[in-house]
Length: 339
Image 1: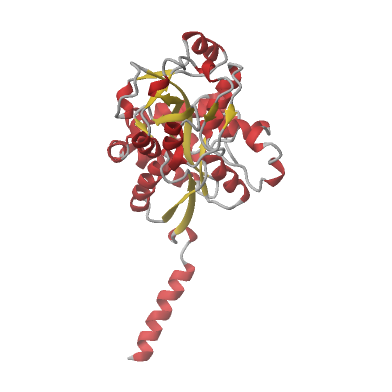
Image 2 (image 1 turned 180 degrees about the vertical axis):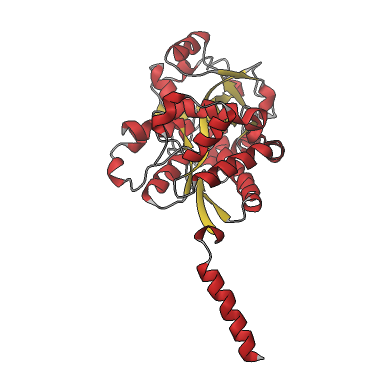
């Protein structure tokens, strides 16, 4: 009896060893933003869904100081997947700002494989200072927390402030203290932002408990200048922040974010992942309103994301197949498919 049991076990082990590689569970260390950020909250929801929908993969969500950390970490082999934006891709492609001198460290090139939502950023001030600060230009020379250094929101806001020739003093803070630092007067303004035009970052909700802040909109002249320099501008209902932000509308600057895997994940699997996300987008949006844009139009949003970055980093062939099938692919992108 014992010999027969060992013989049966040997057959099972031989079968397992000879099974194709794709049948084995593949771990994915997926980097995202810190706990309390839009990216971390959304990836936790997405990973939970994909771990059930695609059991051949096992995703571990790894919070980092900011999205740019994950792009660099993927490029150097520290992470298996990352949280990428059109802003980070632009800096990577042009060897500038946060990616200055980074090219020599790249072991594999990041690619775009799934665009998830836009992030929209602006600035907030103490409500009692609204008479003092009426436009972004009023912050010239002031102490401003434009978000942590690795944050792409910070990069976007500082690009916009530079475009308006507004010079300020940057103050680095821990997210957990931003509200209290604003309330105490240690800073004059702080970054505020939303995901998918629907939801504020969790840390901003917590900051609201420490400070009664008001959204500071750029002036009409500042908006016109930003639009002339190719910045997108959206106007949101202030109720998106789920508190009184002391303005009738909130003017924010959106940019594109995605959760990306590389060529280590086959095109067929990325294609299936996108199909599954599209099929269950309403459920994902119910769990996290950050997915509202893909729930409304998954294929159209992929087109908008790719349009923002097609000339910056390659496009995963799985995403290209999905977009061709949906009729949102453009022939000018053919030469940008990753190989």
